[in-house]
Length: 235
Image (tube, rainbow, N blue to C red; front, side, top):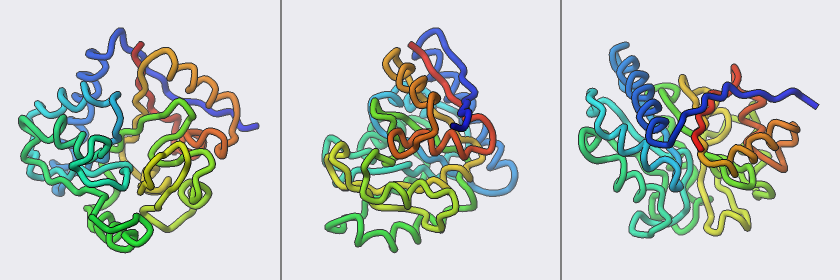
């Protein structure tokens, strides 16, 4: 068994974590812009990032030079409650961040499988590797749309794979999904796992106890990251 490890930073509460993470992400985006190009930010859905989104939305930087996209998406339009695009529009793309460019993954096709070429072209059009990617983690150890028993899981978490995006269907996913692949996430200049609550801490501890990525796909990210995966947690 491989020894999996993360660089875990703990915060006293979720508000403090949200502001600290927002400050760090904003600084990374500023740095990329200062280097003469645009900056790209890929974010995850769920309830965990809402405080972080609100804090980041107030950061002062050249948001017109920032493209925000999604780590993954449910294959539903942004009029649906469970849409990650809707979450980002309602909680991140406001205040200062309202000036950012948004690149959604859902494009209105009837199924994600048929949309892959178009979405892959859109992602390949982003300027270089992602500047920042923020991951979440489910109680089953999934991250992005890398679900245990997902129909394309093996392809999606192949560190040598060439695809930028992958469709995913799994019972736990409910809707069909589309997700950035593991190589795209690993190439991000700043990659962070954001988890909150005692239950998620227990899930993380379980993930670190084995290297079986099929059972807990977050292990694929931890095992293949260039350095111990930066992880932020608050109770």
